[in-house]
Image (cartoon, rainbow over all chains, first blue to last red):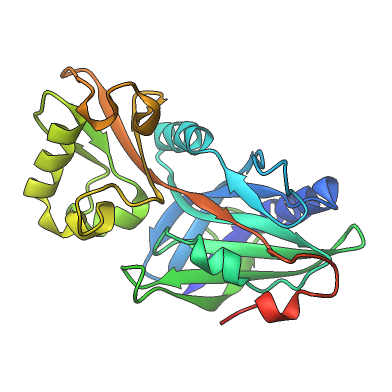
Length: 151
Length: 105
């Protein structure tokens, strides 16, 4: 399983993390789930509602998520993942990320932003079907030139 | 009414993104959904029958939890319910340099 994403979308989600530094950014990956992994067709920036603790927390309001989902469906796209940044923190999922992860089958992309500069970007697939058997599994990010390309 | 199913729960609705059900209230609609797709029950509700804390249900553009009648709110055939799991996280670090104990299980 790999995350398929265009260079433009990959660059854009990393740039988002630099723009919001030292706060966490967040957004949604729209696309299609296929046998070889999630294919991203578009990314959508979202607001971080955790203004009380934006340097170490993010939350996307359900209503914003619903609107993104509605717009996506109009284009035949589903929510296949999310992204957020870790300001001055490794691009690894945290215990908070894990506890708050409920979108099974989706990909959680995390970018470390060190001193304002995007560093590593990792993708984690949330496997399992329940809160008891869920697990994050790191997956390869396959950068494509255009949506639908294999490499 | 139409119920929108989020991607992670479509495994339990025969991959359907929307499910049509009959019901006079939000609760009746959710009950009808679970009756049609029993595997959803565990994912939506706690053992004592309450919506799980990370499961948001919206009646059109309103969070059902904040409606005066909550799940007992009346619905019409034209209404739309949307089930949307929460999305949140973050480093959770209390401060720079104290992060490692919080990273990964």
